[in-house]
Length: 312
Length: 271
Image (tube, rainbow over all chains, first blue to last red):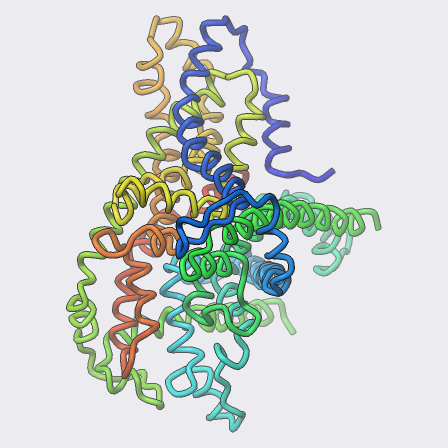
């Protein structure tokens, strides 16, 4: 069974024996306690979202404020036929998928390396989490200039030293540049989650496997990986949902050129440069639909991969 | 190969990889202390006599004002999220509402809602109310963005409070307010602090909403940094200095709270 956080919580609730007999007064007290938070969120997220859905059905460009009217699904039709939507969906999915996969991979390597006892481990761990903490706008700028730049970028200094061709990363390989920066930012995120998983392993089982003569690779694939399943799922799901909204590195590194115009950036262009509210709202709704699909697929795929691994 | 030699090799490899990974941060900090001509040189230099011109230039660009705005927005947003989350988390853990699961999924679904889906109406409504470019309004929006994570995370801490303690307090006739503020809160203080920290980190680093909902008076640090993109001439030293200042508070906060970070990032799912 796929263990999502929600399932975990539901399971916790079910097994929790704290439930005492509740009077109706207590039920109402609990409701009143919950109410402010719920109302606040409805006001600031649910209502604006429904408004976005509403906007997406009207013709409304701020350049022509008087030409406003209900157009049913015409904005979606325009979005689908404009030729901007599909590349944007591809960009969003490719950037999200590759950034998640690479950061998961590197996160796993670093988690395994840092799970050992060695001198200065705490320092190494502290250094490792720093890229995730740095303001993303700052990271994007640092990479753009001090790493990727053709003149002052370290990567190109390396290229010149090794007599390799000099590459303007953010203009020649914009997609790769964005993915590199995102991978760098999210590797610590995955590492922290996986490290928590590794440290929660039952050392008794690991020792027993060792005594039984299982090699490190066998122990890793048969015991550690299945144990990490829930942690990988949480990492991928949360990572994907955050990265799918990504805006900062695109605005700073590529401005949406070269196949990096994600839905968030497209919406920004349409709304705040093109001033087309109806059209932009349609992209907003499409982004939500895509987020739901990606989150669902991310969970299902993971679930399958792990079931295949576990039943061998 | 003996066991200890192999161990030594793995440790060396670990350090090499960690240092390569950390290098961009190291380089940012170093560049901030270089004179512009050295920072923007085609030949990278590690040894030089450090200067603070980069920092002075960053401050000359009015960075102090943006930093103050960032602090105002992050602190206010965190207070809003924490104040609303404490009673909510309490109702989802100790004094249970009936549908805990649906309430929890409601919170998580708002967290997963892309900003892109809500930013347009927020922009238009705030514009009509004359509340665009208002730092407290930005803080209110951040409060809403942070609230779901704060609720989930605090709930995971509240669940660890031994119920006997709450029961004893009730038997002694403690009212609801006393039960929360005097009995439960002191026990979950580390959790509240961790949730507040996550909320602060998010608000401090946020770029998308800050770019769209502020322009001048309420501009925060991330869009200010973003404006360096259009720079001309040599500016790597001042850029690195500004980026270092901007990143420092969260780096320090994150380093101090490393243990709680995982729990916050996973919304309390991983302890």
